[in-house]
Length: 269
Image 1 (tube, helix red, strand yellow):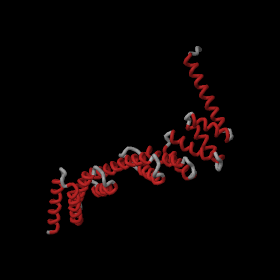
Image 2 (tube, one colour):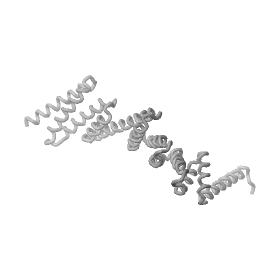
Image 3 (cartoon, helix red, strand yellow):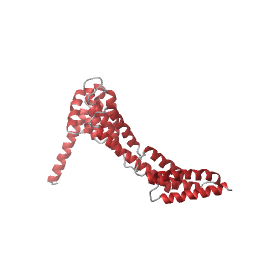
Image 4 (cartoon, one colour):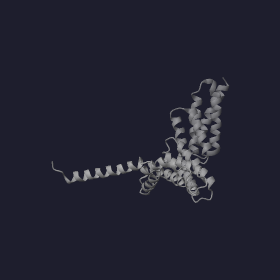
């Protein structure tokens, strides 16, 4: 059977990969901590972080309490970060800072732990738990190192995360209203206004709150209508106090008038 040049090249490539893999496996199962440490550093230097971390993880117990332990722990966290394993890197950088509290690398470790959470933060429509964790981590860093040259960057990233969380809260409130979950819409949007008092969506949020409050009252059983119309009047007044010059102010005035008429009707039996 005739062997082509392509087949020869493919066979050589497979043989090379097999030999490389075998060499790594020999190191991995050698039980020689010094050799594994040396090779792990070599893999780290050429950005083979998966191999480096495989070896670092195996030798951590052997170097516990020794001078090399700090470097191993830091590079282990870095390897996860550079590999994009940000859940793990956030944990291991925080663990490094707690374990080596006197280390000159502690500041960088805390910053990278927070940055790892930032990289986990999803687009605003999704759950923002990791965004809150990132904010908390950046805030701890700023409080711990107020003179750091990273403080300005941390504050910018906190602002980005808060904007994302604000949009998530606003979007959730509108979703509740559109699905006629009026109580949830009111609660969600009122919480948003408390959490983000400077939001650019304040006028629209208060308008939706009034609409939801009115619809909730209209669709309530008779014994709850009076209470809910009264609350809607209060929400109308709150809107007009802050947004009396907006295009929707006339609509709010009309809703307030309607509520007052409904209340008179209820009170007159």
